Length: 414
Ligand code: GLU
Image 1 (cartoon, rainbow, N blue to C red):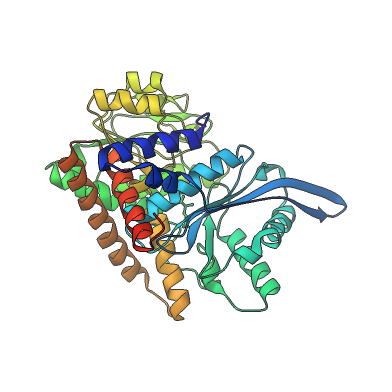
Image 2 (cartoon, rainbow, N blue to C red):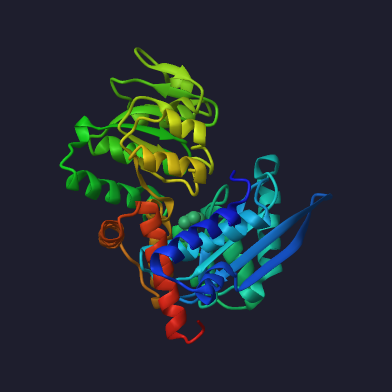
């Protein structure tokens, strides 16, 4: 993890401010969260007392209700959650959906707890913050180590406390509770739409492109499968235990099966495939790298060794600030997280919309809407980068900052 994620966010704001000619008031508006909610949550399960620090940061609702996931992770502290909440406001503005930015977290390791304990803690999180949540106020979603099951339990607790049916108060829910088809594959799908647009512009052919993917959780595994189906050559895969590298190409389906059996990726290596450390895929000989694990994995040292043409950031914050400068000097293009992984929150927005209207959107419609939204966002960011002569990261951030400031100006608050 970056040492000071919120400090890095502020650096991004300064960069954008210089580019857009923003003044002190605008910078302060972009750097100040609307509200920080912080409580210790507790639950008692079969005589075991659980107590953990919990957060919800409501960063900005200038463009719509606060929106963003809740993570269960031992490293989820206030600095990180605040930075991620700010980045959600940026992300929603990049793809131009009418939502603001928020993020939640509980500092603990969910892998050390039973399902019953996780449910109890999920209910405790809602109990702590429910007065500040709601369809028109703040709409959470899954993030690292939370999922549809947790969202279902959180919805139930919220409805119990409020005495109302309120499916639009949370997204990423099971289909039986108003979830939307395609939400669990949306992050990877959105990135694929952007990659396809980029590849088409460059006149490249998927079959000539060698892709390495770091991380084989939901986003990484889905991404591997979608790219394989589209004819891209997957030459490297990694989970938290190891990597499998094969220049001939790997079939991700084989590895999904291996993982479903509870084994590691490396157990699926056969023939010409070589196994190694997870980090090996970051610096391997390939054309495209997709970081799809946790943040901060592309460090200065990694960046120095990299030879790919393009990095598509499926994880949040995989590249450190120092590494980013090296990549720019090596002209390695980076499609940043706030654009590359915005498919997740975009489909969350469709889910929220269908719940508010009491409708159901089909999978086909979801993918059509997502494609249009992502392609438009890519066009906007690429055009901004060209006009200002800056990287895609600076372009995406600055374009979003400009949209947030515009909303704040129109409200008369800056
Ligand atoms: N946690 C996801 C993200 O970082 C999704 C958030 C949402 O759907 O609200 O973008």
